[in-house]
Image (tube, rainbow, N blue to C red; front, top):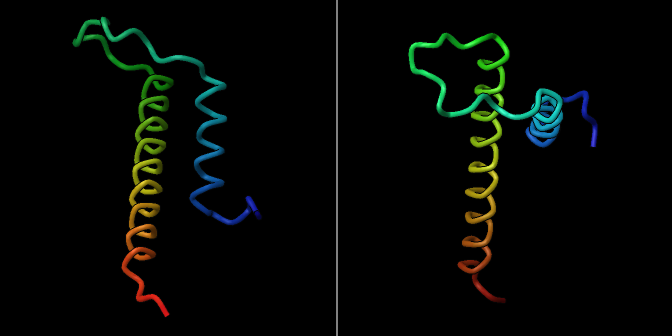
Length: 74
């Protein structure tokens, strides 16, 4: 695997590493009026990208499984 190319797997691994480096998100009980710091915004965006990538991979896996079961037997 060449992580110099922008493959989704490499991107997900990079984002997971960045997320782990920043630690946990701020508590959910923070007041709504409190502004987000740049770090909070980065963490939010990373989580959204990771969530999207996981959903995309699950959909891709389900599609592959469905195509395998629908393939005509020879």
